[in-house]
Image 1 (cartoon, rainbow, N blue to C red):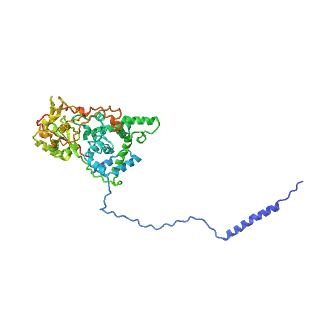
Image 2 (image 1 turned 120 degrees about the vertical axis):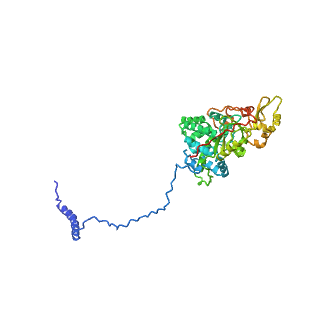
Image 3 (image 1 turned 90 degrees about the horizontal axis):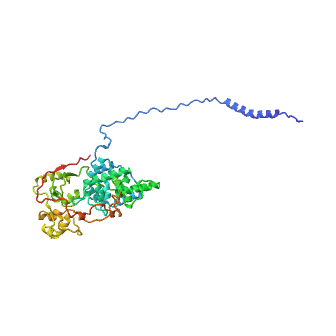
Length: 467
């Protein structure tokens, strides 16, 4: 039988243990004064007087940049028109180092470009194209309109014969418009616009200008088939094209911040350097230069397209003169009462040779060959028409100190479709379907009357003023 043990003594012990400390705490609390929590008001410092700024009437105005006002320096105008995405690669850095290591080269190129760059910038802005392209002739030809490559590319924009024909640049016995400043610039910008619209990317357009648009299209399709990117840096291309855009980017970087690279760019006035004058009759290059009171060398720098010492009248033919020389030329032309050409066409007769023809007209055989673009390998005989002086003095050096190219026969396969511009070693074998200059040189395309005083009516066509 279970026995129940009462738990009362244990309960009393627990109550005593718990209540005694509580009573002691209550006693201590009753001895201390009651503390009531109340919010403490923050102390507000005394208000200080507000300082006033006294404005003076003679404070300088804030500096502003009026983008509607054309700058005085053409370089600044070019910088404002930059519009191509930048690329940053080791190739760009290497090209920058190359240019920066050759300050004298940059100085010469800039000096050469000052004659042409304003016209190019004007044409770019009319078309809404980025002004970086005004630096492209530095890459192409160092701004030399007489540049000629092993791939038969010629002029400041380096057109090969086939592309020049596509863009209506005349290449004949009289002249080669690939060297014409105005015509070649218009053709180059037309071409660049066309290939930009094809790719929608300026870097790919530039690659096409150098390599050929079809070649670039094939490289793009090849990358697409492999699931690879199709931007300029991702395509497989010849080394010349691989370096092409980095060269332009390096020049852009230097022009954008010349101080950063410790480069001094001589200012180029932001105004037209030249104007055009329309001539209505055959005129000697030497006489045109004399009427403009220029040296023949200075005249040819602006008129480098002529192959012969005569400016042909082709109905609306124009010459290019420095802006300050136009009035001088027109005034001297009005007072000129002598024939404007000293040359005539001469057909070789049976029994005559180049030696006898040269002697008959008071010039050396070498001069006769140069004037007519006759290569030593060409066979010239009876029936061929030559350009000869109408007077003996026309064959002298002072009237023939012109930079006439000696014809070089070139034989090659037609340019492959899509390879319009390339100047690589493979392109040098494909100069295009142009009749060799040596073959065309035998017969001038127009006869020049001797001793005929042409009409002096000319019209000055002044370009639009710079914006």
